[in-house]
Image (cartoon, rainbow, N blue to C red; front, side, top):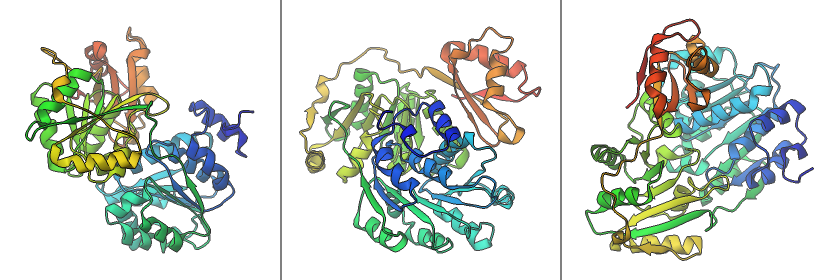
Length: 460
């Protein structure tokens, strides 16, 4: 029996089988260090970089500790953003496939309260939510946490940064004193230690390497002149030709302006920031994750918890004054033992920030001049996939298998050219390879899904 496999853990056979079916073959460092303690019922104070596998760690702990036959809210996961809450909920549902009738409910702002009232009447086993909306439901009496067994604070440092401490503590007041509390944080400021002392009982302190291997991420800094940021960014895209990129800006307005400027230059770029409404945020995230956009321009808050598979490059358009934030930004590429590319722009006046990053990562930084970048005439960066939006979702009982079946049954369209399928309450999205996009659109427009006609449109 291999040392760091999930089979070494005292888990139910059906849960182990499901974990294996999800291709989780070996535990990541955070899982290997934390899961044995979590399964023993210990409180945990854990630090791990973004993309380390912590959601699977606390997800397995929750499922190991709850009773599906008991229709009470037994676990609560508090997240800083709607995007992260949605991702955590999806991962928990995947992990819970082996446990029939497990009810996972997401409670976030930006969505009407009415449908959430109805869902809460059915006493969900697991609730995942943002502090403000959780507090709202507690205040009006629609959320009952008196039967809670497990509390998880995910990305606790980001919640502090966003000013959620008071709301979090008010939510925790409504939970039983006797429970397991798991606190996960990418960074370890003093405030995290203070919260831990207030809400945890003799927590086990777990930390894993927060820096990235030099061989895993190729990191290059480019010194630029004032006013040249966008020009050099385009030169980087022409030179390196990444299929998918995540570009970090420090401000929301800068995100939108840069995405619009890139779009005018012929790049498929979308912006992700806090001013988008929920429907638009969902759509942008779907396109980023299913490879139907080439460039996602985001702020740190909007990108927190974002996990784009096989992201080719992270481009730091403007360096953060916090070197730890910089390390977490670039950690979104080069995941799961793959290699990644991290490119950062800075002006001479920002040299102190670069030195701070060098000191923090304890390794020298490579600095190049933009003149070294290779120009390409008539360069195009086209996403490999096209995203089709279907006006029908979970509420109409539409499933991913129904969409795949509609596309491939009795047609010549090969299933291997159909990519990621995402189902929301009222909409569904399917990514298809660009070469078959027109054919797929016509099949869905002219045909039926589950015997019903749905409106379909191709996202730009």
